[in-house]
Amino acid sequence: KGDTVKEVLDYVEFDADTLVRKLRQDVELAVRQGKIDYEESGHLLRFYEEGLQGYTYLEDPKDAR
Image (cartoon, rainbow, N blue to C red; front, side):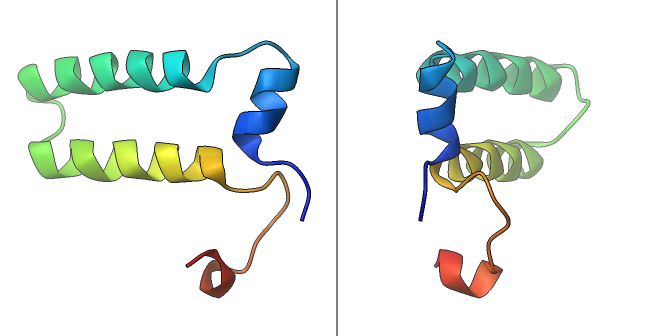
């Protein structure tokens, strides 16, 4: 199937765990500031983390499950 987004980020020396941690901090701040609610924050983080596990080309959503 090819490389995942996380693998490609590793190739160019980006640490996916660090990116997730920074996003989580920003999302938590946005919740505290009332810019997004708790439910939205969970959706955003899941979407981002699932995206890192996806491939670098378009996938059929039915196949991603």
